[in-house]
Amino acid sequence: MQSVVFAQAPANAPVDTVLSAVAYVEARASAAETARAALKQYGDAGRNQDGLTRVELFEQVGRPGHFAIIETWRDQNAFDARDGAAQKQLLAALQPIRVSDYDQRLYKTLTTAPEVTSTERKTVYVIAHVDVAPNSQAPVLLKRLAEASRQEAGNLRFDVVQHTMRANHFTVIERWRNQQALDSHVAAAHTRQYRDELQPLTGSPLDERVYTSVD
Image (cartoon, rainbow, N blue to C red; front, top):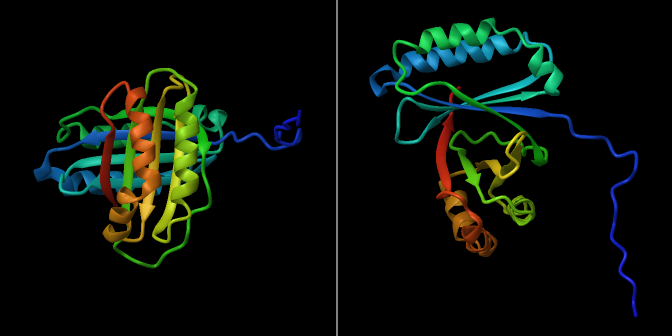
């Protein structure tokens, strides 16, 4: 009988300690511009935070005032040691105009890859929340989807992060060259296969939203 050998990661492989803080907040549509200004100020302040490598600001397409904020931290210790003054200032600015609270959750890396550089201005972002019944299959499906999607000509980014406390919750962050590239991805065989296999595992309907970057 032929033996099967399973590949193992090298013993000295570096541990990915990156922490992602994903937040959502909704402001009144009439005050969307005020909210954008407050978020931009918060993003600028992040450049001075030790261990904060990136702050990304997104607004949902077709829904002014609906925002997602993704912060990338070096590790949990850097996040815990952060200066909370900038966030307090942001929350104070949003308080009079918000219609939902600032909801921030922490995630660890499941699978990421370097983002493809693009000078196109019409790139499209998709941020999806995946909530499944506890099982070991969902991470496998998400990794397989990410690997296949990164091979698509129109894909610029496909990252999946996993909740630090609830291992059955995931956030998927995608970036596409344009709407046509996103439409092709949605119709791709590997995307349909992923959704068909994921559906029986889900604990709630797939929450998938399209965003543009707040520059």
